[in-house]
Amino acid sequence: MNRNNIVMTTKMSQLMLKQLGPRLFSTTRFSHSITAESSRIPNGTTVGITRVLNMHVRNWSTHASSESGTDKNENNNTKAISSYWGVAPPSLTKADGSAWKWNCFRPWEAYQADTSIDVTKHHKPVTWNDKIAFWIVQALKYPTHFYFQKKHIHHAVLLETVAAVPGMVGGMLLHTKSLRRFEQSGGWIKALLEEAENERMHLMTFIDVYEPKWHERALVFAVQGVFFNAYFLAYLASPKLAHRITGYLEEEAVNSYTDFLNDLEKGVMKDIPAPAIAIDYWCLPQNSTLKDVVRVIRADEAHHRDLNHYASDIQCQGHELKEYPAPIGYH
Image (cartoon, rainbow, N blue to C red):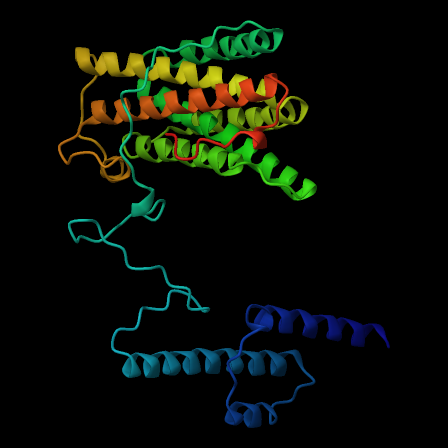
């Protein structure tokens, strides 16, 4: 085969993959009329092949639309097809019958936060493992406080982009461990991923109130990149140290939100209406304000504090997490 034939074959293959790739597994049949028409086009040229493929695509679109129209005529209550495969989301409503507009979480994931939890609890560092974890967190605390000072919402946005990492990393590593060892996790995978999702919802709430500037986005990008990899390595080396670090991080988060709440109550910051997403996620009253949102978020952080200190205690006593049922739904 000479060079020209190789080049032509390569181009033909690329065109066919480009046009037919997304539909290689389609069960839709093309009509005979298109097949007959394509036989009259010179297939030995790139232009000819392109025309054939374009006709197939146009015919598929027409055929799919006509089938969809037929189905709708046969069934009056058919759901709208949202994708080629027909995987359409369910139509969800609130308790009052209004449409559910959030895609980032579902009604059954909403809950009422337990704000009665003790937000003053502190795990006193006794062992070397505890002291190392405590001083790591203290070393991280002062630069952030110096940078943000009284900019509580700015601080909260950065805090949540970091706080959502440990649960995801821990859940991911426990997941792969469970697969490698063919063993259950005692529910800890779900508990840690639940924590990560809850922290992410805190962020979704705050970005409804404040839009980060470009330099804050750059800072988040850098901090998250460093923290994710550092925490990943720490969890591989010592899960009990990693959970203790997270426990102390959550203690600092509780303290930060306490300062936030105090400034709102003193009038240092304006107490604006609560974002709609927060009202639906925490099942808050419609007249709730930012003060109520900060209060429930602080309660969430306190629950995450207890969960991670508990996980570290289990491992510090020589046990594995799977031996003790995880407090799923604890927050």
